[in-house]
Image (cartoon, rainbow, N blue to C red; front, side):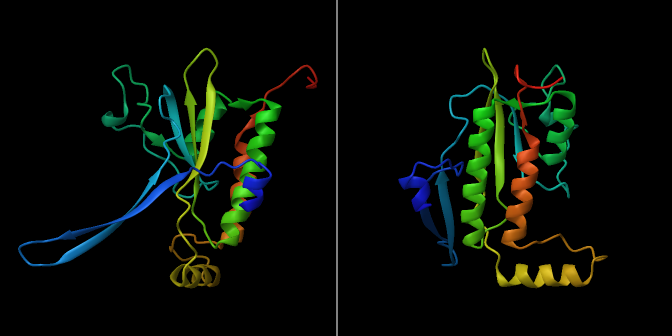
Length: 202
């Protein structure tokens, strides 16, 4: 990350503004409880967002229901604050592909490489690319990597080994940070196509 800062390399990590611990004390029984909080930037601030997706590069249990009435506007369209997942995204781009300009695609790819390498080196996994489409004269794609605080702890290592030894088990799929990095980059990079231009062959 020092190179990202010093050499102004692309990054998509959402900024952390602060980390706080708050203690609660129950006056009736004297028991105390401590919760930890992170304050992060909201990348959609002051944006008129059409839709948001939380993308991990996985298709396992990555389909959000859009049938709930709480997720729908009066006209039946999906309420934009309803965060959809990878399978929803693939269904959406099948109907209406999202294109990036070549320069934007290059920046996004480089940012994902930089960030996923950094996170894998720190033993971090299970992060997501939060992507949103904003309304305007030209639709804008806004992205940021979030949920990058989960490390590959001992229990996750054991779970991963058991899953590997018992491929037919019903345990959730757990992969190492390096495997997660590779899958995340390859899948996310394929989610966004480059906009055709005059040099694109028919």
